[in-house]
Image (tube, rainbow, N blue to C red; front, top):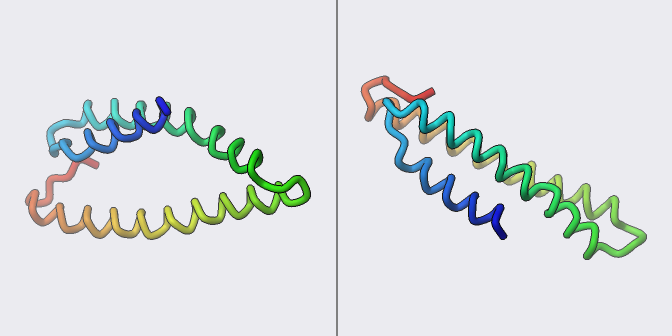
Length: 95
């Protein structure tokens, strides 16, 4: 649960980043990496625990497929939002 709590804090903090807060962005990315390390293995272990013995590999593959399929639209939406924010920040963006 600590990993998902960290997830909520990091993603909430990303909403407060301004074009001049590069250090905050770098720190949040480091914390995001810690969150990811804390939760990815737990998710895979959970899937392996609840999957029937004869289809654990299929369940893990399906889990990774769902994660990948949902990350693609999230990345596209983030790119669109980034392009929109560039206009509102007069071309100054944090990346």
